[in-house]
Length: 243
Length: 243
Image (cartoon, rainbow over all chains, first blue to last red; front, side):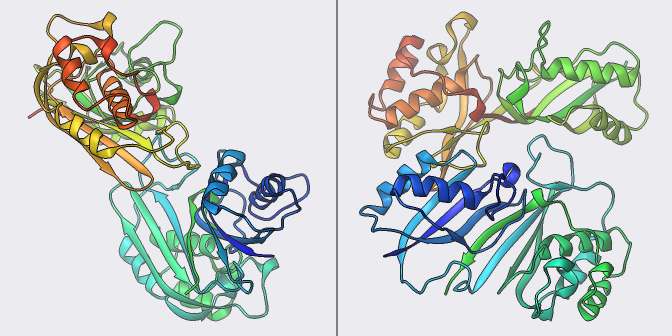
C-alpha cells in the first residue's frame, strides 16, 4: 500500500486541536473522515505536530496509507472540495514506505504573532498586548534559547517526557510598529513549549524578570519559574522539514 | 472650534458601509456615536471615501470639529477603548480649518485581493476565484486604465455624476502562487469603480473578452459592457494622500 504525504493549512479557532478525540471537532478527525469517504476505506492520518486547540497551521505535514491514488493533483482538488473551509490541503505526494510525518522530521518552525496595536483584522489570529515593552531585554533573553538545552522548564508538567533536550537552530523576532512575530526553528518541540517561551519573554519585556530568567528556567527544568503560556491563537506551525 | 483628522482601519464585514443610515450599523454612525459620547457634544464625521457594505479600510481618513482635545494621543487611546473591535483609530491630529477629508484629498489608493487557491485564512477578506486565468491578458488590459479617462462605464449607473473623469496615476498587480492583489491609485473614484474594474479584468483573464474591451467600456461609458462588480470583501481602501 503506498504512503502519501499531505501538506496542510488550517485555522485552529474552531478545532479542539489536531488530535482526534471523541465528540470533539479535530483536524485529524475531519481529515480521516473526509479522506475515508473519498477513498472508500478507513484512513488513519499521522501529523508532524499535534497542535493544541486554537493553534493554526500554515504548513502542517501528515502522512497516510491507502490504495494507490491515480492522479494526486486531481485528488487534491476533490479533497479540498470535501474539506471544511478552515482546512486546506496544499500538496499531496507519494513518499517512501518508511517516511513518517513525525519521526522523519528534522526541523520544525513555529511563528507566534503579537499585535502591538489594536486592529480589526487580528481577532483570533494574534495575541494583543498593551503597554510598553523592553524589546532589548526580550532580544537578549531570546538569544539564550539557541542551541541544545533541556527544555523541561518550558514544557507542560503533565506532558513531560524523559528526554526534554531540544536543539533550537534559530530563535528571533521580526517586528514593525504594529506587529511582532517570534520565529523559532528546532529539531523538536515539547508540549506547549513555544507558548511558554513567548509568555516568559513578554514577562521579561514588561520588566517582571531580567533576561537571565531564561537560564534559571532551563537550568532548573521547573516550569513554575516560567511565565504563563501565551494564548493559543497567536501560534502558527509554519513548516516541517525532512532533509 | 478646531478641526481634527482621524486615520482609521476597519473590517467592513459587519457594517452596512461607511455612510450613516437609519437602523443600520455603519462605520460613520459608530464613530459619531462614540466620539459624541466621549466628547460630550454631537459630532459629525466626514470620511474621505464612502466605502460600501463589506468593504474594508486600512487607511480611511476622516475629519470632525469639536471643542479642543487637550491630549490627542491620550484621547486616541480612550477612543480605541470605546470603539468596537472592528474599527481601530490609528492617528488623530489637529488640521487647519479648511481641511476636508474628502475634498482636500489628492490621491486615494485601493487594493483588491483575489485568492487563487483555497485558504482557511481568507474568509471575508478576499475573492476566491477558480480555474485558469490568462494573466498576460489581464496585465495588458490593466495598462489601458492608466491616465485620464471618462470612467462612466465603470460606475454604478444610478450613482453617475455629470463629470466622470478620473486620473489613474497607477494600476497594477502584485501576485504570487496563491494571491493576486490589484492596486490602483487615482485622484478620485466613482461609485463601485474598483469592483467593476476588477470584475471586468477577471472576465478578460477567463477569456470572455479581449483586453481591448476596456477601451470599449471607457469609450462608450456604458456599464452594461463591463463585467459584474467583484464581491465587496476583497476591496480595501488603503490610503488617502493630501499633498
